[in-house]
Figure (cartoon, rainbow, N blue to C red):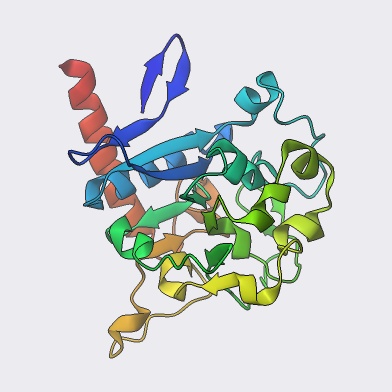
Length: 256
């Protein structure tokens, strides 16, 4: 990520091909700036393909007239609804990904991109998840609803006819149920991604004898080590290690 005229610019790891980077839109919340940076770092350091990482910043979207929705009492982050602008932000072309900032990638994003199947409008991990906690992160209300966490990491077929409905008007006016449950789609238009790509800390489990259960992307959905209350959560050591690498590299760039 770079700064130009005070605005965040996309970070591109072009891998020698600047023309076709895989677009990854990451939900951004000022309270979780460090989480965003670490998530971005974890993707870039392991990617063997060109990727373009673009933070979805609500303040920028409001300035551009793409987002005007008032924040509801159950929105735990600034990107609770703006995430659904992903196809619009990708100009309704090709495939793009949205992911919450509270992810840590442990594998090459190419492996995830290679799962893409053009017959689907979207693809995601289809969790059966009911949180036990009543609060998460820094005291935000933990809401329970069908298909919870499905929308936290989504591969969007941005050019799919069904996704044309995701205009700013729709995203700003439709209900949470309509958007987070993908009610503009039929079930057979939603492709399945293995759970290890959205491995829910505190919910999903690693089976030592089964490599297919080892997480490729950890989702600290209850709250991550960047919050004091969650500094000892499961896999905290992996996130903290990534943070140290990010901070070390950031310091080196400043010094140079």
